[in-house]
Image (cartoon, rainbow, N blue to C red; front, side, top):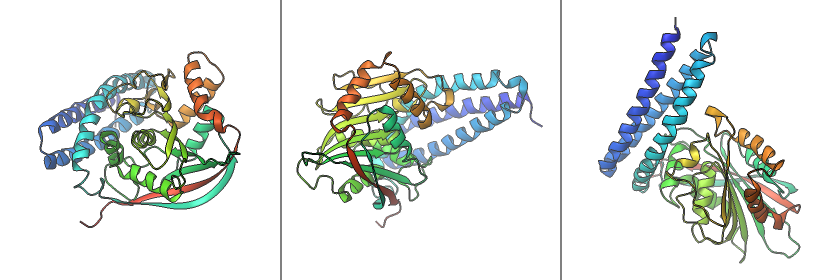
Length: 353
């Protein structure tokens, strides 16, 4: 039977796994592309072991009253200190490897992507941050779902709002879901290559966005979805990107147009916004709000961000600049009727060569 020593042993294994992961990633710097792909697969295995060991440790800790307070706090400190430093170093390296392999390995940019319309709805354009979070939460589905809204304007101009989900499959092993960890890493490393990004652009094309000159789009993304939104906004498209709202997204690596209004929300306990290795640049048109909610291991949870959004909406303390920038993005369409459609995004990760 397990005891407190067993819990400590598992915690030590977690620490060892973190060190092993860091060593593997750093060694990938000196490998050739094909060897780098093998190292990437090894890192994926280590990540799975790390998650399994951490979950086992937490489960064991919860079984003992004497450890109820001390062990979770130690684990939280471990994750809070080791993981952010690790991902800030590891993920850019993985992204570079992924970008090199994107034209060679199945599951990267060779995957054929698809976007199928799955239904329509009617609503009113969002007026505040909680409205945006509620719409992002509506994309939380096992398969990747893209939400596209067209705003009814009196001028006849075509305005769209697009909501891009976060990672839907926590695995590097490619399946029919393009929003997996492989796409997340590839999207950070380069624009236009990740299967998830290409499936989003395919859906926008099927929605007719950009088929009329002057079409304007506001992109709202969570986590990987925010990275994809930044990638799309950083390159010329058939449509004009008017605004970008990033929730928990690594977007600092993209050279966004200086005229683009960007509002970014990040939790200080969430390591994901740092996956591209740096903080968002200070800019008049890019405003980043940092929340200090002590959510510990759940800092990246979208539901938690939704609760934070409601708190921010009720108070200007520390968030006035962020809320002003958000209103610049939302105000032109506020309260107007919208018609929307869902697009299910899939891929064939093993195309014929």
